[in-house]
Length: 50
Image 1 (cartoon, helix red, strand yellow):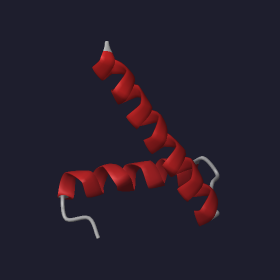
Image 2: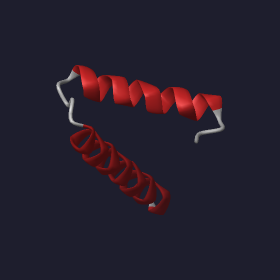
Image 3: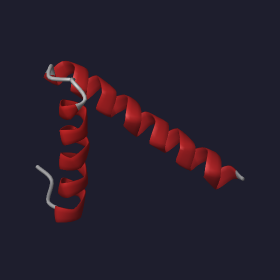
């Protein structure tokens, strides 16, 4: 359960975008969401080292 309303809102927005783009299978959505989080962390780590 997300306790931070701002974070909850951001996650809901991502779920809505995945759903509206045709990912109606929850497992596909979770896979894509996990991949986006991985890329975000990779980008943050890359920017931190520069």
